[in-house]
Length: 365
Picture 1: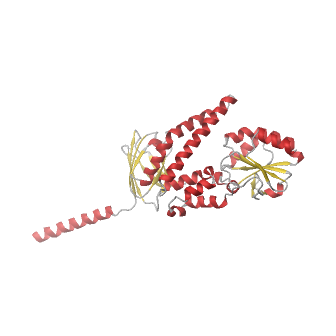
Picture 2: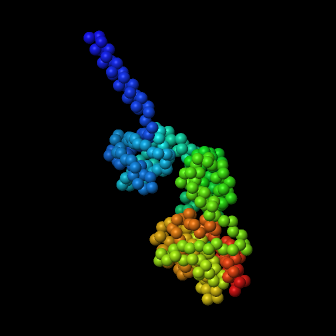
Picture 3: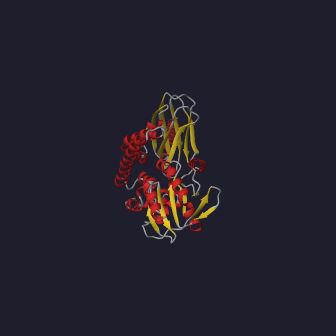
């Protein structure tokens, strides 16, 4: 009898040991969520590139998600069909992660357990004061009835805050060269930083991160981007117009041709478009041409802006946003920007806006 009891006890202990070992060897993620005031049965989802990769429901203001990712991945955690703003972008990796939030305020949630997310939290904390000021100024600028002088003063403040925000991101990349957050941040701001700064920062980034999607995009930018100076020959390009027809720059080039980089979402671009239209109408029959290269991503927004602003010249885009290949080729760091090309294909001016463009065209014609 004693032998039987001993045998059964041994089996129980062995089974418990195996279960413990199995539990300890789990190499996926486990998200434990704690959300105040959120109703039972609320659906919680994790999305990557708008595709749901995991989901569960809330019970007693709690939820649990268990799964596995191949590598640390930037995801969205959100609730479905909620009137509240319940979403949070964060870095998901294979570890135990605690998620603390309140209904309607996922964006200010606290996430513990993801090393990459903790690095992202450091950057977010540094940027947050400027982001709030940035959003506040952007809201003011959306008021179409603003006085012109006041609008200009807000735009100046807007640009100052933007510069400070960029400086913070640069410093972070230098401090955390081994972080996925740094490679993602550098990819996000590469065109704004410009080729030389991007190249210098990229040289600091861990070599293993060069093979990530962000790393490859940065390398492509460095490869394509050229430092063009006054007197250099233009770089020919081809992109699709509004009708899907491929337009080659060299085929529409005239006596003087302006390559105008812009986007529907760019406030200074839209503000200067009426003056650009005036100059085009004034000189188009004398040999002046414009080709607009848009850094838009959404086709409808691009088309609406062209129609509303009356941009009657040729407009092209690859709808890749800041990844527009012509913008990368020409080293465009911010918009609006432009290049004035003469009949010999030489760049004779860059960054001409309003009065500067008006004076230059008067000089040429």
